[in-house]
Length: 232
Image: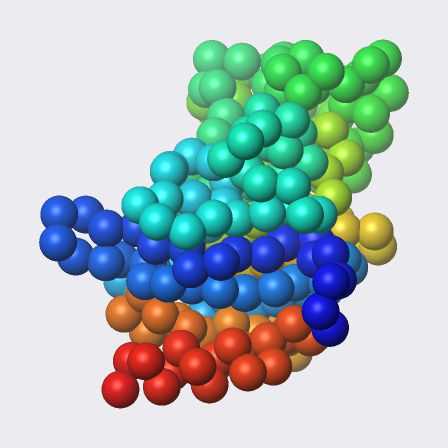
């Protein structure tokens, strides 16, 4: 598939802390519209990989590309195309749900954001509580508001770190409908919920000690074999 532009591509992406490579030479290629489960034990490098792809952390070596454009050369422009859900909901506790979404809409330059904000708050079940301070909400409602935050600027690539955390059954259905199976987006999601992967993913990347040891994505042919061989 030489010459193809991938929605997300990494080339030898590496992050070292001191002499330890937490992410070690990761090369993956995800086509547009794909839904990839990122798996591995605690400490395998999943969160560090997602942090680099989210531009929250600079790599030690290697590069990452969105639609053929380097994250390193125009990070602000590329960041507008990303929807990021980390372990922390990344919300302002002193703001109301409406204020939180307005802040992030302004940050990403969303024009006439009011209808979009109302739509998302209604979908996640927070419209009637839109004027309450976020600090009074439960963990589950924080996560629901975070789902809305991820989507307020209509990103094309979703980077999700354990998105099921704190969600009840209804919240999990929202996660599936809004993010994991939504049309028109590409998804890379770290998860420990192996029982749910078959419900939303069409491929997977498995990490061990910062290296890819299995890659069943459409762009993964040969990559996993090479990296697994290097591990040995």
